[in-house]
Amino acid sequence: MYLFNIQRFSTHDGPGIRTTVFFKGCPLKCVWCHNPESQRPGPDVMHNPERCVLCGRCVSGCPSQAIKIENGTLVTDPERCTGCGLCADECLNCAREVAGREYTVAEVMDAVRRDKTFYGESGGGVTFSGGECLTAGSELTELLRECKRSGIHTAVDTCGFCGTEALAATVPYTDLYLYDIKCLDPELHRELTGADNAVILKNLRFLKDKGAAIWLRLPLIEGLNTSEDEIEGLLELAEELRPRRVSLLPYHNTGSFKYQRLNREVQSFSPPGTEKLEELKNRFEALGLDTKIGA
Image 1 (cartoon, rainbow, N blue to C red):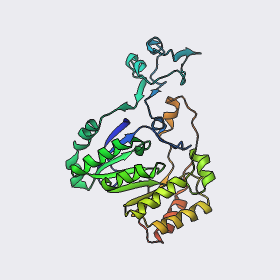
Image 2 (tube, rainbow, N blue to C red; image 1 turned 30 degrees about the vertical axis):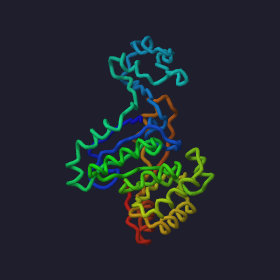
Image 3 (cartoon, helix red, strand yellow; image 1 turned 180 degrees about the horizontal axis):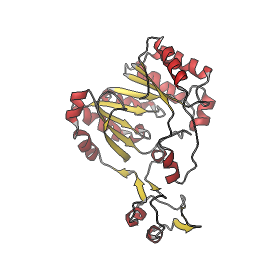
Image 4 (cartoon, one colour; image 1 turned 45 degrees about the vertical axis):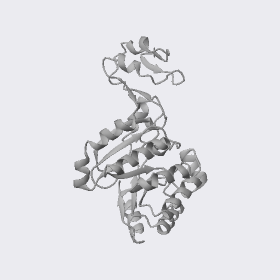
């Protein structure tokens, strides 16, 4: 399995102090994604032009001849780049880095167990995130099983776009699902994420029927998925499912620099205003739902 980060002492991905394990690969391509390096299943090479002195060591060190200096700028051909990381090894200024490497279950568990004391004291645990962690299939299930054997609270942060069988395999070993709903209109969902949402809603109801604990997470991007029709639909869905928590997640642009480092176009979006967020929070709370602004 490929991961791009194991973040210790996280407080935003479930209850308490957590270790968040970020998997590479995602079946959705959300236009606002703040971790674009998570989307491809394999490694990505990121380039920081602020550190680059155009020495050319990466050019000569690339076995695929994917890098060249053109008009005073370092250019990488994504069709040629294999993500081998040899260019990063050659770079003396750390201007190139590889996002993502292969891990074994044992390696991940070694990292997870390191902070077990903090989990117990804070009511925390481990969150498997991404990208989309469910793309790891049996390896994710094995990790969850090992965590339960070790007495560690488990959370799965998912977009829900997966086979129901893969999701079902995680249920016996998962204490909490952090379940993202991007929007409800199928055509809009396809436009914003590249995929339909029928499977996502089916899997969400499957978890509800299984009695799983769910935190419903709603990313909110002004002008994209914050229309009154969308909000009314989300309120109806939340009232039907009665999740343990609703998290309203206003858009943030903290990952915009990553697009530049991946040589991809940066798109600009905005969060809803403070007053609108408070109004939405009040509307969900009026249904008797524990509602938070932010993760």
